Picture 1 (cartoon, rainbow, N blue to C red):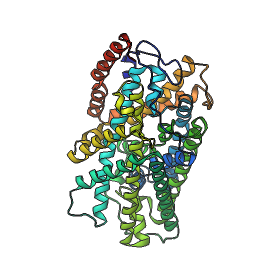
Picture 2 (picture 1 turned 30 degrees about the vertical axis):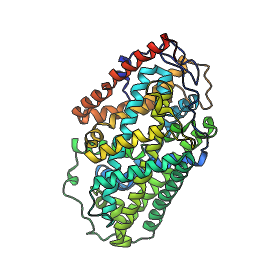
Picture 3 (picture 1 turned 135 degrees about the vertical axis):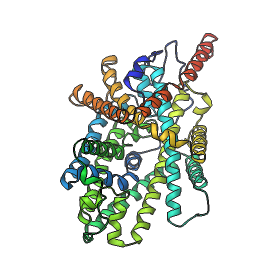
Length: 476
């Protein structure tokens, strides 16, 4: 998840000669005996896209969006626009992912396009983002559990660590079981949100005095209005984040050259429909002024229908959504370290695959790191500064897709982005613009994000010297 400026400063130490091996003098060959099991189907691919996107964000985001827009048709148009932007940006991602069908998301794609240094930095930041996100989400999960009246005397950090370890245990059992658990969880939470939307559509409107508008936002004019609209755009973008999840499992999904594209596009379409239905259903119950500024707009709307029980319902759905996302992120992030280790840029022990198809050591490292962050609270700082990385990962894939068209014109491309290069350039510019918005909004955030980008360079250079020594000694 590096910015193009950072990538330009990184040395390109090696190039990839084909889809499975790096054969120049800089990088060792892949360990071919470390192989993931191709046991996942299109249903799983669809589940990770839907499950990776739909979370607690849709319950919190409408309040922020309504605060900036204050108009029902305009709000729905912006949510539709979020789905369209995700769909358009997915095209260069799917092209690159289908052309380089390797596990690990943006890491192998960036490596193929810009060399192992850029790939290493991209993989590092993506993994770190998932680690911090796991810790943060697990703590929020603990808050939801206690809101439901369970384990109220137990510290939140203990519940958070328990969730991480439990999910890691599911992943430890094997790819089929962890994949099935993700498919079931995604179906349950997708169905739950559709059920909530249906319930709201048959509910009466809230009384005029329900959840009165806070005094601040009628004054949203001039710069304040622009700032609120920018915040609405950012929140919608973040609520759609996660639609790239299928490419992390390209070595485990059957026919990835076809199914990754199908899962990604169909998943984004389904998520967009769910988001539009949920927002339209809320507007059926609440006015834009009643939604604006709400910290849990869907919860407020469901209370009109179910009363106090509505809070319990929404909290339970939120807890389920968060647990499913932690499960997915442990699956996805462990594939990053697996692929990096198989490529030789991390210790080879992390590329060992258990009989059930799971890279258990990669799962264990991720779970331990996430648990330490959750228990210590140190994830909070990382969560505040990782926004540019998450957007930068998509930007890197867009740039990689463009560069690979010129670098390897004969590379097999099962899916080709239409209107190339203009659509790919537009997608890249959108991501770059979003990074600029985030950084300009908080310059200190941009500074510390850049520091974390550069932090692992000594580790990379140390491993590189070892690779060269091994190659010179005749030990690949």
